[in-house]
Amino acid sequence: MSLVIVGSLAFDTIQTPWGRRERIVGGSGTYCSLAASFFTHPQVVGVVGEDFPTAVIRLFKARGIDVEGLEIKPGKTFHWEGRYGYDPNLRETIRTDVNVYEGYQPVLPDSYRKTEIVFLANIDPDLQGRILAQVRRPKLVAMDTMNHWIRSKPRAIRRVLKKVDILFANDEEIRMLTDETNLIKAGRKILACGPRLVVTKKGEHGALVFSRRFVFGVLANPCEDVVDPTGAGDSFAGGFLGYLDKKKSFSPLD
Image 1 (cartoon, rainbow, N blue to C red):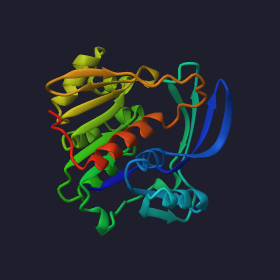
Image 2: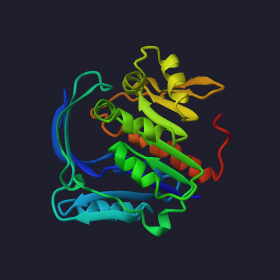
Image 3: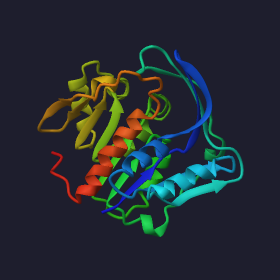
């Protein structure tokens, strides 16, 4: 089987109660691909500027990540700045510089178009839809999103939702998508939109998984010292899908 991951490769400036770091490498595509590489050899799709470290691209290759779908364009790499308080599940976006993502029109390499698993990580839902249209008969499609896209492009998200099998989102995003405070009711509303599985990320509390047949919760592995939660959900999704790709088959999601 094969796994294509479409997401951002970025610089993050992060402020937490424990410190501040500027322009460190991040992005949903980065975290997800590296996590998936523990189980399989993912193919990454994204765009970076000329300022993106070549050492990171070398790391991708060393981890068995296929970078044929990674474009390097003149200009600066996508940059996100955010702030966390003492609750690591809540983040505040301070600034977003799209840079080389402005006007980006991804084209999948021919070798990616027959992939069996596609992950549309946290990027513009219009881009998610365009990319998905280039894949020939995938067996499994998953997506992620965030509050920014839910507020700014709700119709585009719903168009993509109709075409995916799994949605990954945190509890705040699930509630925003459905205008429903109860997570069980919210999960069922999203299932009615098209996905066969809704994976609700709950940070240090684990995850709630909804299908048409069952609802169950899983605990997270306790960590004593957490100083930066950025990319945790992307890493979780990458490990989840990388494992499915390694298994070469998956149980019915319904």
